[in-house]
Image 1 (cartoon, one colour):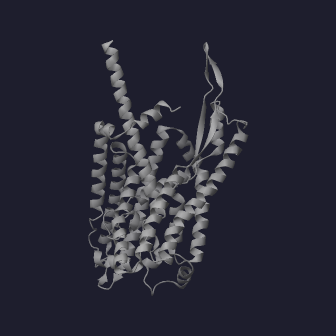
Image 2 (cartoon, helix red, strand yellow):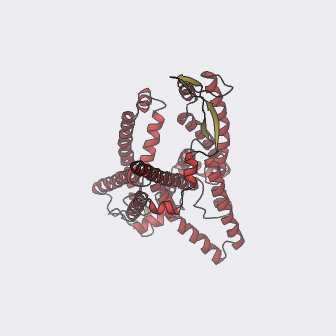
Image 3 (cartoon, helix red, strand yellow):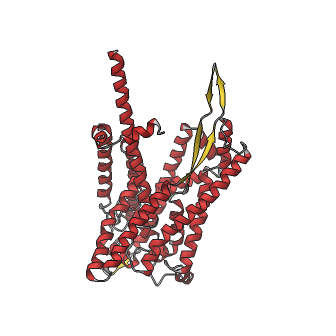
Length: 449
């Protein structure tokens, strides 16, 4: 029998959406904030020749971490705009703080302190964002100052003023995006940081589709192959949605207890364990580490490239056997590593024991922790294989079939995950609006009586 929440969710329709005034205001605010973000990606940094920079990026072919960041930034890095780093320093700082909570006891204690601890961790995340943005902006300014294209250098006068102004502009742009993401979370439909990354990735989709259709029109790509590619994209999206929603529900039973003159409790709940607990963190980490040599090659000219780095580049060419093998290995490693940080079986078992919950057939305490770890390890194996398959598909298509498949791998995982979370947020707002309507009706009926 469906619960009251499920029955209420089934009644959510466009009629309820039209009556939800607050939700429409949140959606309009979110759209306006994303438009501001997209306009900022076209505001260039003074002193940089965008034409020379574009020629260098085209020559590199999107290789390296710069190419991956430019995809996440919606082309802002290739245009060297004020949002060149996008929100990536904030993401990196958040991941670092989250990792520190599993290593440093004081950070772990702050995580357990509730709202006060969360505010401290957010403050450390902001400080880390400023530091990482400053370091990355200096490296980016140094790299751009060394770019030289057919028409001359990208920066005509790379003096101290250029470095200071570039660093201040890029750091300010990153902090503005962090503030904008928090405003979308508070006043919009939620998931502000994720929606900014989502907008940057989706902005490149029309260009990639136009490029593929142009290849088909000129005969460089067979029309049947293009059709099969579109079918494959739809099938992969359906597969990603299915795997991201997949979870193992472990039944948790709570015993009955005496409360006054009646018995309460005895209900059964479930503990959901996601198939992909690590999310998109493993592919991002693996891609960043493996593409560092390509990034160094992009920032260096051919004559100044060290011999040892050239040898590494020869063995670590994207699409090669060694590259793909290391890519799979690192995805699997980071899946297990990040899952062990985000979910602690011992802590979960202690919490269940504290509130009287237990898994049927498993003794509370240590045995429950071992059982949860047993289930989580097997889920992580399947989740790691799923991530490796999705991330290897665009690499194989791009290298073996010369397909400009930019909408795949990590970007596809991010787009699908953010879309699912946003739809869930909109549905929760609609359900809250219906709850408010039911409460108002009940109050009116009470007054009438």
